[in-house]
Length: 360
Image (tube, rainbow, N blue to C red; front, side, top):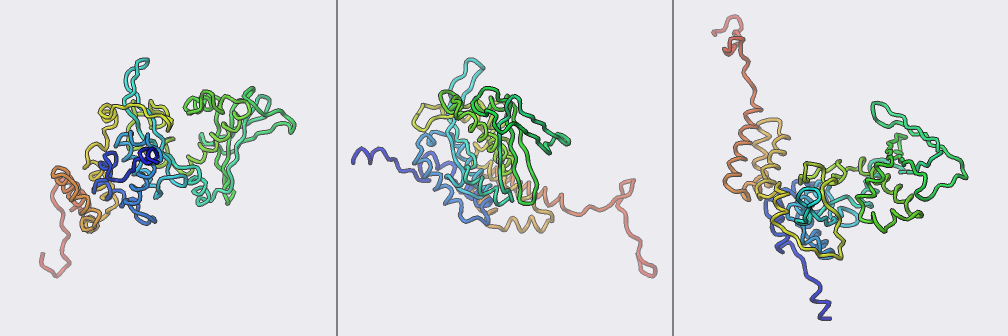
């Protein structure tokens, strides 16, 4: 009993790993995204704490990646778990090729499969189908302006279609209730790249003749679903706030999946150097203010924004330098929305002549 009790470390929003990302400024940012949803920032952070309790390696992830995960979930108006956002710890490496060293771990968020299925239904998708293309199959891809508009795939009913031998590629289609279709086609380069990025690339289903086909079909369906629903880990949808080494999308960053059973050491300082965005507590506040100001199309709208509770919370939680920056941004937005006085070609302000009978 004692062993069980000591093995369970309770995780709350006040633990060192979560305290930096649960600041008042960040909670205000999350609540701004969660307007109209069934829960608030407090619930979202507590759900993240619950996930860290179940998967301890997430506690080693950088605070920048945890911040990104929270914003990713809030922008999709969902929470963490099998019906929302799943988190996978990934090892981060730094250094030149051939001499890389592990410098930390990041939490990579992605929309859970069950969430995507429900989202597809809400978007009017009736069915998602995928199939493998083997040597000898009749396979044609019709494009219009680079977009796949139709796929023709024919093969004999009794053709042998299993295993890795003879696979040329794969394709999938999402069929909407109104009859529209969206296609996805993968060649062998795409398939091999997906296999290389998988945590089961060695000794797993990718290397089994019986399971290779289902893994390819699953990959096509996931790629197609992500293009429709939106998932930043494939370069679509939410958009990552964390720049990957080399400036690539997060999915192409130099990392590998860390099994939940492993607890490797990490260097938080080195990881922080790789993921600087979001380092300063005021960065999310000023970024959010900029986004809110873009939605204001009149000076009165800017004034009304400054009176909202969300704006006041961001203001109070910001340092003096950030407050000065926010004031400057608001003033610049108001000035940009003020009506301009037309001028003559010489630069003098023009005036409208008074009606006859009236003094100028």
